[in-house]
Image 1 (cartoon, helix red, strand yellow):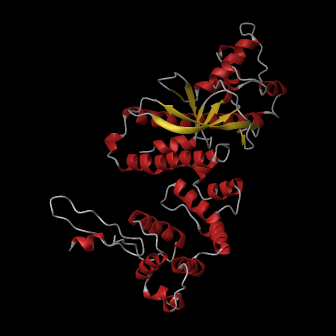
Image 2 (cartoon, rainbow, N blue to C red):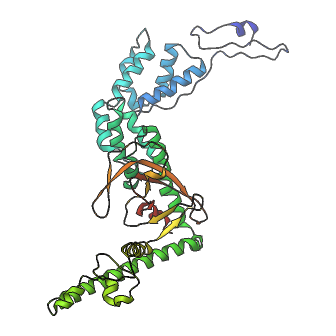
Amino acid sequence: MSDKEGKSGNADGDSENLKPPQDGNFFSCSRVAVRVPAFWANNVKLYFAQIEANFRIAGIVSEQTKFDTLVAALDSQTLTHVSDLLYTPPKDNPYTALKNRLLSEFEVSQNKKVRALLEDLYLGDRKPSSLLRQMQDLSEGLVDDAFLKNLWLNRLPVNIRTILIISSESLSKLAEMADRMHEYNLGEVAAVKASKPEYCTSELKEMKLQISELSKQVETLNASFASLNAKTRRNRSRSKSRERNNRLCFYHYKFGDRAHKCIKPCSFQNNDVNPSEISVASETLVYSRRLYVQDRITKTQFLVDTGSDVSCYPKSYLNEVLKLQGTTLFAANGSRIKTFGSKLLSLDLGLQRKLQWPFVIADITKPIIGADFCSNLVC
């Protein structure tokens, strides 16, 4: 190639000439090649965002060059939709005209986007944040964040939705929390289930045995009270003096003045036991049959209650101002429990690894490990 040819330029402005080096070994570049992917009929906007990035990298600014490059990337079926523009290209801005035609032909209508947003999107095996991004792309400002949040939460698993629905964090923050919880559910629990039996530590096995033993003790106690009530009803009509004994608690009814414990209400009179001691004894009886575990780092004791659907943490344990949430929990006796958001706790229960789980901040007196936490400890 001659030096004169090396100095020649390209009329469309897309080529870049290189000056020959001093050693005599030189070359010239009359055109910068650009490769664009095949046309994406299912996502036209994203397709044009990519090919126009390729045009900028290659330094292509000519409408005609962009038009020819785009035509080369279209398949035969797509070309039938724009054949008139190929046979008679517009003199001014042919690429822009072709781009607008493809957008009008293949871009999803707003009605279809709304229908997909309301009916067709599911979590599947994706991360919650991925589902949220797709829903945001479809919404394109058609709905506000509050409505979009409700749609997104309704497509998440129940255990994740129960925690996040009472949080006042932003959508992006909620997506991060949902990803961590989803990863914990599908990753940590699946890894534990797939591991060998020896992965289960002796401490975890002991905890499961304690829970099983506690359940048996509760069943035995319920059976004893049921039997006592049946016997009391049978003997009620036999003797008035016997009827007075029906007001005795289980321990004084069975052991009389030799009883060391008492459950109110009880009509037994004993000068050696004052009311405060009876109250403490009764409370000791109740809490002695409950299982507690202790966090090794904070020394906080957690009540293990598989009857609670969610794990809760007392509001009084946090030295910060908390905002009352709209969601209300219910205790076993039907009383309402106020909630104040959620907090991700990292617990060291002596199980070889720390356990992270979001706890609902509630108006309670003791931290509770509920069924949602315990379900992730099953090996």
